[in-house]
Image (cartoon, rainbow, N blue to C red; front, side, top):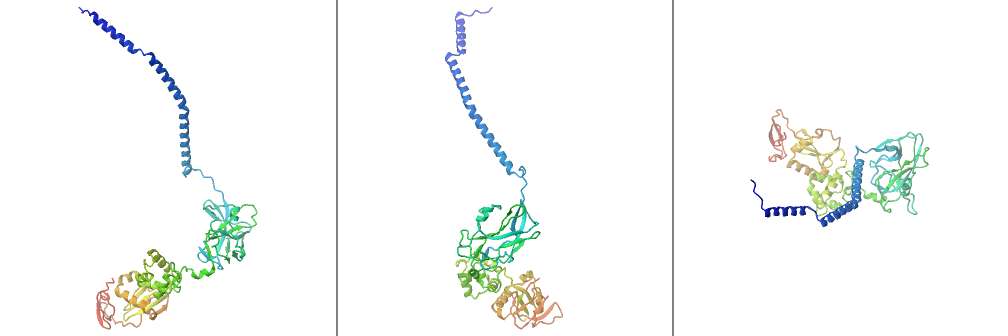
Length: 440
């Protein structure tokens, strides 16, 4: 039998049920608040949407632009239009960087400049031959034209860059400046041209030679003008101070780079008796340390870089075929014009390969070469081909007859390998090794 619930319990349950129902029902204020919040959010969305669309559109456009730029930079993606062909005049050889007035204009090899008519498509250049003659005129151009590295310019730009002579002066270029490229020809040689004035009076201080077509051509196509590399024009009196490329043995020593005429290095060398390029090269071969000291070393302004530049220039000299023979009782040393060993002849055996000479060289050989340098004027001088055997020149030496290659008696007056000097004496040398030279 179920127990009856008491009245207080029933009342308590009813009260709790009523409170739960009241809590679950929203209040009027909260309902109003939610409605206002919904309206505010809708208003926010309505106002934010255009701004969001604009930002998205801008970012999309930026992305498209970046993609297009990358495509244009990529050779594999870029579609190249065929480049048009055009005709132009062109100097076929390079001019000298410095030219003197009243001297014929030439290229770096001393040859006259050559002017050609060519056709260019992109980077490809081919010689062009027209069925008719083309008349051209040589003019002087400002050394700074064009202002950029561009290869094409207008006719007006070219004409404005032409340099006119100074007031009261002769035309800048003497001789005839008009040439004709004949039909089917390979070009024309631009010879006999000379400058009458230096280039120091214009802002760039440099000139260029230009070539332009005069009279046009029959079909009306333009032929682009030619330009040389820029160069400096100096007065002829400055030529007496010019460096020689290459120098000669007889050139005065100031013809070498970094050594100015009557400058401090020139005076120091002159005081030491070094007057010519040959004298400079001879001492550099015998005692380079002494030569550096004469020039003053770093304290005297002769840096390592300057020294290397002078020596490099001097060694471009053509030393010729002259050879100088230093004789001893059982040896002969052949030197070239700059005091370098060409061959060594000992008791009739000739050693002339550079590798072998470097192996047998020692203090005694160096001393003999130094002695030859100091007595240069007394050496036997011969003008012969370099490859001729110096063995033919070895005469008058006291060489003993040897019946056995293992044993030979000979006069010996060279100190090598720690042996004592024996002048006019006899010494037994086994194995034909010339004492303790250890040549093999």
